[in-house]
Image (cartoon, rainbow, N blue to C red; front, top):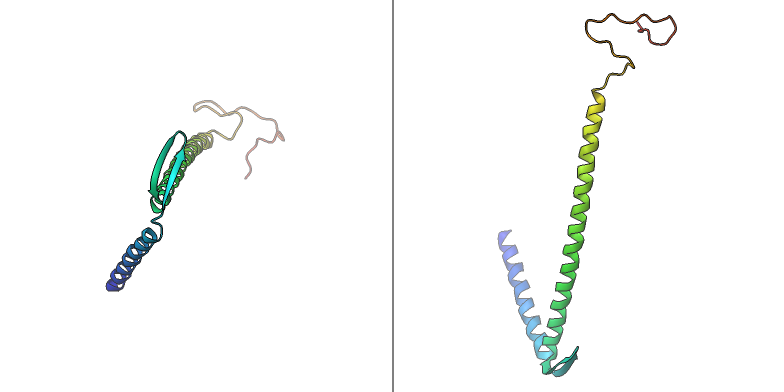
Length: 121
């Protein structure tokens, strides 16, 4: 199975080399570039295409990095809020359920029958 991967990798590299050679051979015409105040004369078309591809790749990468950074900051903010809310829930679990907690050593206050605070049995 390992040799199949190696053969596929070699075929992929060979296809890439041949297609690159054909691309350069078929796009050897020269063009003149006028762009924002500078002029470049006699540039081969394949170089112009390669330059535009690289420029698009760099621009897309910069946008992706900024978007990823923004998403990471939002995720961090949400994780922090969830951690704070979890801490608050744990603190609320430790609160007594009765409205009047009896201190140790004190007698339990007398309640009238039917006030809803007697213990069920």
